Each structure stands twice: as structure tokens, then as C-alpha cells.
View 1 (cartoon, rainbow, N blue to C red):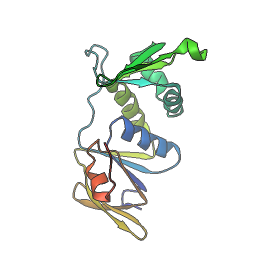
View 2: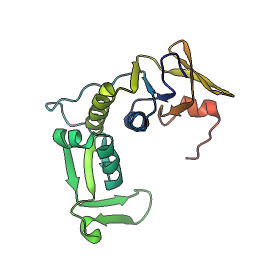
View 3: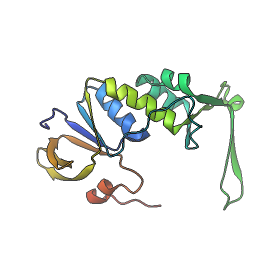
Length: 181
């Protein structure tokens, strides 16, 4: 257990890390979310964020369970009923239609800034979440009774470390987890 009371540290507060931290807290864990840069709050008069997600029904169900989907819809989200997917380097394409599965929509297109704002607002109010910004996880060490994690010059003992620190995750590299691209 860390001196701060968290038994889980989530390294990285992007959409994946924020969702994981919130889901773990909702499951009863005491979570510390560590993020070097706190996301800028979303404002309705901001230009649309060009980084978007096609949020499918299963992800919508998760966001509903986490208590953020209603906020996302109130900010900015657009339903989609048709999607074509192709690779410029290959022939062919995939075409998905809501009508083909008897559904009114396939999902919603949501800006990354909108998702982050909704998730972080919920994280800030959650009683089992502590947010540490301006620092990152510098490293970790597996121990017999858990994991010792270096956070902003402080060594914390936890049961679980979630590495959601980006595509080129330094923590994944330190753990020796290989990826194939």
C-alpha cells in the first residue's frame, strides 16, 4: 500500500489511462493517476479537436457505466450510421452500415478533448482517485509483495501498476514487454 493510500497507480491520463483509472476506482480500488500534463478543459467555443474516436456501442456502454457518456453527449458528439474503411496501400475496403445490423447507428464520433474533459471531471470528483499532475512514473521494481513505483522522486508501494503512458511506453519497455508493429 502506498503511503498515500492508493493500491493502484495508473501511469498516463489520456483516454485509455483515465478510463482505466475510473473503472478501477468504480470497482473499489484506491487509485493514483499520474500524468505529466493535465488536459486543458474543453470549451464549447473551442475549435473542434481533429483527433476523434469512433465510439462503438460496447465503448458507449463502458462510458455509461463510468458515468461520463451523458456528459459527452451534452458537449459534442455526432452519431454515425455508415463507415468505410480502407488502406491506401491495398485494394478493397470494408463498408459498415447500421441498417445491415438493424441498428439506428453504428456509434458516435467524439473528439478526444471532449472525452478527456468528461473523464477528468469525473476523476476529480471520485473519492477513490488521487490525481498527481506535473510528474510521471520514472520507473518501477517488482517485489514479492507488490510493485515499488518511482513517482516524482517518491517511492510508492502498490499492488498494481497500469502502464498507459503512450504508444512508445517507457514502462512497457522497462517491463520487457515486446510489441510487433
